[in-house]
Image (cartoon, rainbow, N blue to C red; front, side, top):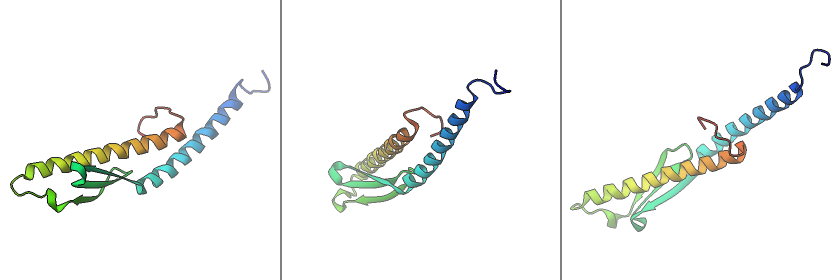
Length: 110
């Protein structure tokens, strides 16, 4: 062995630098994604929503024609469908962008 160094330790240092760089990129991307939004609609556009990358509902628009006092349940269903689809799209957006940084690694909590 050479002067107290372990074989492969240089590679470990490089790997740690790569991990730190990836962490910095992920933090930057997470901040950016919190500001990005996706839009979803249901009922042929009767209800539309905007959801952030932070998975927060930012906006709901309801076409007045979708408001029927005799069928409130239908409007509720349209809202649920639009919100759930918006949340799914936001999750896909975040996962897709994170995969670009992590190279597809499955890192828990991200």
